[in-house]
Amino acid sequence: MKRPLASLLLACACALAGAGAQAEPAAPAEPAKPSAPRAIWTWEEDSYAMLEQPAAAGRAIGFLQSKSVDTVFLYADAYGGRNLIATQPQLYRRLIRRLHASGLKAYALLGSGYLNTERYVLPKHRAEALAMLQRVLDYNKAAAPEERFDGINVDIEPHILAEWSTRKMELLREFVELSDALMRAKRASGQTLPIGPAIPFWLDGLNVEYKGVAKPVSQHVQDLYDYVALMDYRDRALGGDGIVSHAMDELAYADKTGKQVLIGVETLPNAIKKVSFFHLKEADLERELGITAREVGSMKPFGGFVIHHYGQYRKWLGLD
Image (cartoon, rainbow, N blue to C red; front, side, top):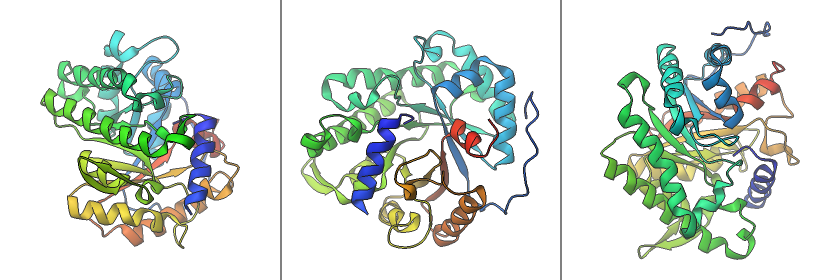
């Protein structure tokens, strides 16, 4: 989730674990991109701009097409005192129609630094989490097929909570319980769109008991959801502390369960350099994604990459 504190805490935990209405500037020649699907997290400010400003949407679509991104994780909750999916769903209908017409998929992105949704893992806030999901389900039910979300990505990160250091295992159990509740709500709606969370790669090293079964948190989560977007925040593909190594447990487990794993990479600046590609160049990102795709591309659960995040990705490339 787009917030400096979240980035810092995730980085520390990871370290411990091991086209448009406006013309884009001319871009330098790029290396060939890996033949794997790509998604992009698109947070509050950027998503609301795309919803309310057709020119911003056009600029985003052209940029994403140029970078071989085929799925937009579009923020779909409150921001700046407004909640457009509840009060102005026609804006979502217009944008999603345009994304689909441009060959892009749209996933509803749920979770927010603005709303402090890390609190939703706590039982006393569970109703807020369910209401957040229900608004998207209600939107999809009322929308025409070409206006519907293709899926949902949930970004609720318990490790951001202040009490993480003292209640880690309890918070992780509550995260699994919340995940179960969200998926039960989806099933009750009768809708089949895939739902998956953004999770840090190090959850596979933490075991909790849920419904009498003790195993890694990542496996409980993969059992419940349709896919996971793995925050595999490293700046190189290979080695014991590389992207491929950190994804293997989730990929291997998904191979048994028939689920999918998307591999997420970071472009935000970070005090720990290895967490992000920020200190490197686009060619380095493309090289490492290419190596990753060659290493895991033959594995059936591999669902491609997710880049964090749209606004920062553009800035990193020198476009804004």
